[in-house]
Amino acid sequence: MTIPTTVQLGKSAIAPIGVGTWAWGDSFFWTYGKEYGEAQLVDAFNSSVDAGITMFDTAEIYGLGESERILGRLVKTRNEKIYIATKYMPVPWRVSAKQVSDAVDASFSRLGVEFVDLYQIHQPFSFLMGQPTLLKTLAREVEAGRIGALGVSNYSESQMREAHGTLASLGIPLAVNQMQYSLLYRKIESNGVLAAARELGVTILAYSPIAQGLLTGKYTANGPAVVTGARKMDARFKPEGLQKIQPILTTLKEIGEKHDRTCAQVALNWLIAQPGVIPIPGAKTADQAAQNAGAIGWSLNDEEIAEIDRVSRASL
Ligand SMILES: NC(=O)c1ccc[n+]([C@@H]2O[C@H](COP(=O)([O-])OP(=O)(O)OC[C@H]3O[C@@H](n4cnc5c(N)ncnc54)[C@H](OP(=O)(O)O)[C@@H]3O)[C@@H](O)[C@H]2O)c1
Image 1 (cartoon, helix red, strand yellow):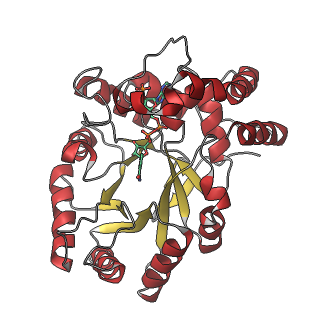
Image 2 (cartoon, rainbow, N blue to C red):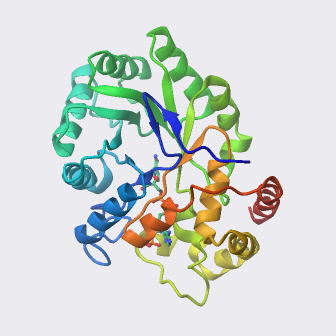
């Protein structure tokens, strides 16, 4: 299986991997301002762009707008075309089309842009404003040339089909459904989302693709890495959870050694080898960004893909 050098996302061709920026400016779940700060993020951004990775995923709620502000500052420091994907959060007090367009304006203002390549609905919540109003308003933003492509996130198969149908009736494609997908979390393979996305031509943007660091192999019961932030509460990061994933980590390590690649790079390459899937690993440092960028430019063979698949299923 040879992974592609570029993939189409909305109106642009990009590398088959992006960068997630939830941790940029966020001190609720992550530890921005303590273990890392903007200086590290500047390096992570430059390291990604230097490696040809130019798609960055943010959201209006990340760091309460700080992620968009940081990304906006960084985008202006480079001449390369940066592909910006951001997200709208449906909240109960947003009830009108105007409030949707105001949210787009507010994201643009934080990012310092007048156009984003991809605008996604973060969650399938409807509250008082139904999906049709939300989707029609965003479709008008596409027609107005403010948004390149539309996406959704965390939509079930039926919710995705409905959104796809509403947009299709307006002549606008549904470009992505951003879903959790990794070797440790494979629900989209069994709940119909992945198959339906392929049928409809919707790209899966795979979030938490290295399971928030677990698939790097650096978190074990004896270190070396220390779990920080909200992950301390997560059972997967406790000794029993870490023990359970040893078989898949061993397989990633063994296969990685043959290609001179790390566990994270093998886990990401496996995802990229799944048709219609683009992973967006989060990176907070230049090293992490460079390592994640090294998930492309080489390929696992079919036997390795099958072996990783088999061991991963047994670890779930
Ligand atoms: N749509 C949604 O609902 C949703 C939900 C979650 C995430 N997302 C998106 O998906 C992106 C990625 O997901 P995620 O941040 O949850 O999980 P992830 O990408 O699986 O893990 C990211 C974390 O792993 C560690 N890491 C990354 N690369 C590494 C490397 N090469 N070596 C060692 N450690 C490394 C870093 O944390 P440490 O250094 O602290 O270990 C980093 O913050 C987010 O930034 C966001 O854009 C979307």
